[in-house]
Length: 325
Image (cartoon, rainbow, N blue to C red; front, side):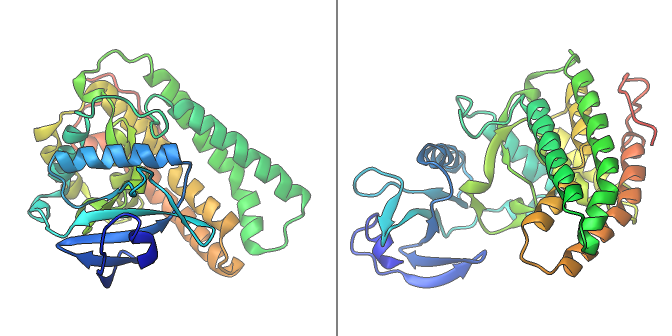
């Protein structure tokens, strides 16, 4: 991969390392990564612009794409197109902050981004994205029925899919009703978030291809989701998270309702279905994972049902509709 980096850095002679599963090369207090081209170039350019902005805002552990000597973001070597990314090896003091503070600081910084990206943004598009996902998986479901599934995973997918569609349609209806909510404020503007938040703010590096542009509750919902699947009580942890988050960026009534809508949409079940349909794992392994998360769904529904009361919010007083599962 050194021949790829040579198109971006003169006289490169970095020392090889491995970070987050990616091969890297360290030189002059900077780590460089060679990654395959994942998207159209315009998307990589937007990722670079977004990640460069976060670096300017003080997040010095963002891995950002570079331009080669020809001013291009991709380089072809041996008929394969690559991008080269880099990050400063210096670490900031983020690890002394709690989850709510970390996320709020990211969102506050990201909200200063001067324009909405054309290709990375999902801001205001949830209804269409969710409906497209529902339509796509309904097509897969109908095809699987015609194929007369024989594996346990396929049969479980067929048996449980109507339930998942029911959850999705409830979330979609709640989202549509939320869009008429007028109690919003400047904290509801779009910001830089993660495609799917999975504790990245505590990891050594933030990867540009994991970033997108959306309402800040996208990250909050995905922070909450695995905790709501847990049977153990997380009331104190959730209270701490929201207390620290709102010290920096308070949520509006619209924001709370949008958060609730995203929690109602079964992203975690769709994610596992997608893995099951594309995975090279054995059908038995996917069956076990899928069955386990379906069993955890009863914890999830109970915890979502009591979310507002558990964090000290009177939903009735604030006229925030709740589903009574």
